[in-house]
Image (tube, rainbow, N blue to C red):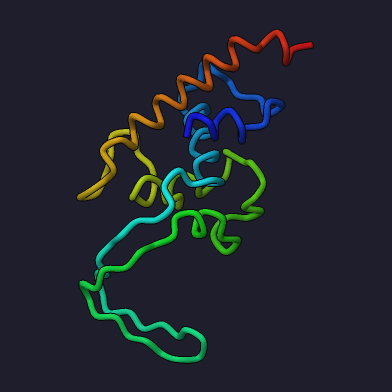
Length: 141
């Protein structure tokens, strides 16, 4: 995630480094665009029927399935212009799938979340602030 922050947040994108939420949103958007976790395994909460290649399949409640975080994070049905960096998306906090959890809260939520999620977000946020502060003279010219 730290590499993504340096690589994927455009240098010209202005961020108020004193605004913790603005920094966090930039980090979450970088994580949404290139998910640091590829998939998550979950148990279906309800019976699910899908049509795949013209054939109907039914999966019972409790069936283990894998969810592609990378693909769902750039789903144009969920995120307008999903390949454009925009940390001001209205649904960024509520709809992002990150670190085995839907949505983001710095204090956590739900029954289970990746134990390193908040540490990774904080580390990447701190890195972004330090990087921007150390290069501020480069970008102000």
